[in-house]
Length: 453
Image 1 (cartoon, helix red, strand yellow):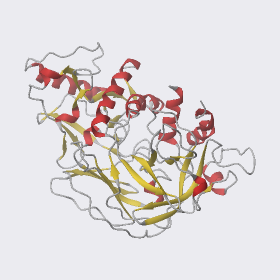
Image 2 (cartoon, helix red, strand yellow):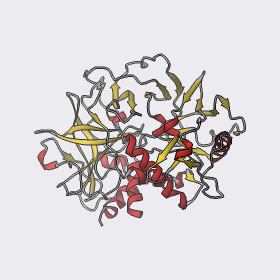
Image 3 (cartoon, helix red, strand yellow):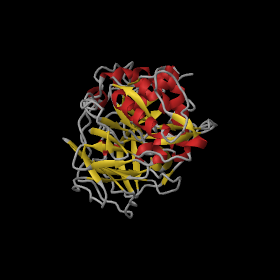
Image 4 (cartoon, rainbow, N blue to C red):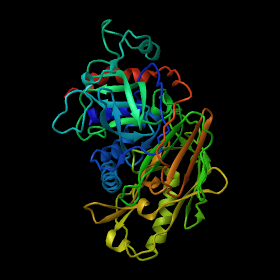
């Protein structure tokens, strides 16, 4: 477990280093996309909050519930998969690699070296004319990681098993030169990125958002198991995105961790009734609710979760359905699938800051049949110190992030197909990356040891 969770820390915290900036990027309304369930997502569901304990976000139900979360997350992944798209990397010719879209990290990285028998396509640096490792003595390495100590003048920035480099990434038909990414030699099996690279879309200094100066990005996770899912983005100052009929907008906040995307959740409704027993200050302690594209399960502050659970339980038991007992902690809510299928499920809506900003959830996304268990369970779990809106509750609607220095706007609404292909040059190079945090430095220092088994 230690090795897996250490790598997850890398996925969450590692910020790659400086580059010569992307000289061109594109308005890519629709990247090549495919959905594929991967067993590793169950580990993300189980270990995410464990890794975030040091940041004040934890699962109140203890270690025992981790298996439940992983099982639930795995079932969700089997139906909806992850947001995965192909990107050509390198030149002479480009090598097409699959990447997972992750809005909670600024890390862009790929598995490098010779492909193993259990891995998806890997990047071969020696086959790209434009590939260049970032040296430990490079001013960029020193500027971003001043605490990092070089063992020698010829060392690469980051170590031997995992280091930072630059190369050309192609978006649509437009090449973006000098993109900084992590090159990792060996990834443990069953980790989220054992088969795919990571495409970070957070606000971090060297995420795709920062390197390409992305002003707006959108994604859609198909809730019908089809092929309608997409990821799209635009660059430069293109103004606010068009608002479709039926869509709702709420401010993106700057929270405790500035690289993440937060929104203010003001309440929860069941069958249209606002749950007034939720304390007013419940969602204000950590700067709002974090949005995630890689964590299927949603976590609510325990005070809100208890009220929601009790309301749902009361309404469902009134219909003579017998609940499946779990533990005195009341940390989950499950029912026999056969009986549950015959009832009228109460509706659940999330209320966000703004005028009539209500997200009506799809029943099949907040009550989910767990594979092999004959149980249907609530996909919302309790936490303390913070809340996370998982990907499962976001399925079936367009999620658009209009990004500004002071926060921005999240717009969600009915499914709308991405527009046709186009490409434009950026209105300038990517901004100079900020200094990496001390925890990033520490992660890089231990990465080489972590990945050797």
